[in-house]
Length: 379
Image (cartoon, rainbow, N blue to C red; front, side, top):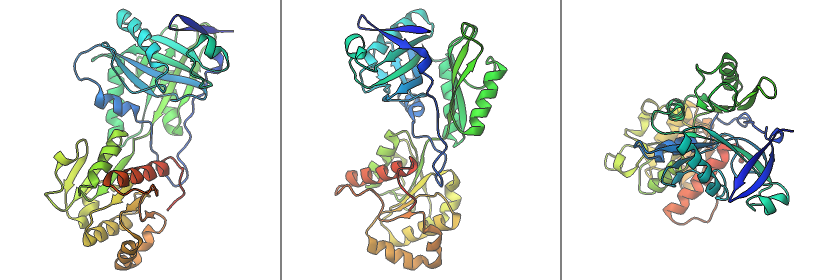
């Protein structure tokens, strides 16, 4: 049986590679948009140093059992020992640093495997007790590298709301191990596998050839990250934007008041000053996954809701404020409210007992996240 070794602080753990084949991304839950909640790609690119510092990209390419992250998760390790992202709860990162040093020294990709299943993990492994196994590819990722180019190209597509794919070759007798876009020098079979991944909206583990002359790759489907629209730019919108941006989401903020619609107040968000009644011509509503109406201005909120009702999307619309205010707005909207019947959540947010703007923002972002993940029923 094909076995490989993984070192941790001088100890050795045996890994059965044949068990590390669990790679799948299910279709989005019925009635919910196609969206990717694992935004490690965007977070890495946003937070990584922009200089020419040597870097190593670590990508989970396969897992078995219970693991902290799944196939497609990434972290970036810098030459100075700092890193962006996590592949475990902190139990593997120290060992990954040691392997990253090898990649930095040689300039060559390297595969590491961890098996944390059963009692052997306590004796010979890292003692995490996670009952899972993980295969990780480490590759050079400095500016101008194969990995840097592939990640940048993928992020360019997803930030525009487009779906795309990445191919991470982690075993091959011919190809350089690493992360590619679906184009030459990849062989036709792998490019075709990437096209199939896009059509099926699912990632897959790709095997080509026979044992000894086998190529293996993670063909990763990448849906766009969540795009949150916030209608209203008051002070309580600021923590909401901060939380969404921390999750790697795209955020658009709209307000009719120029003093509030200031990009400096919402770092990382797209901010527009426009009348509420022109929302459909101001924002690409079809590209938004959720909208929160929170201008604290009755007339503006009514106009926002009417625009969202008449356009028909996004499928999740949250309204800030008590039930009495919701009922007053519903009366003002009349028949237009029917178009929001199964989309509106009002009052918006999971009941956390929140009393501060930050707590309310947490309740809102938690509910949106749960809905996108299919953990909540339609409104």
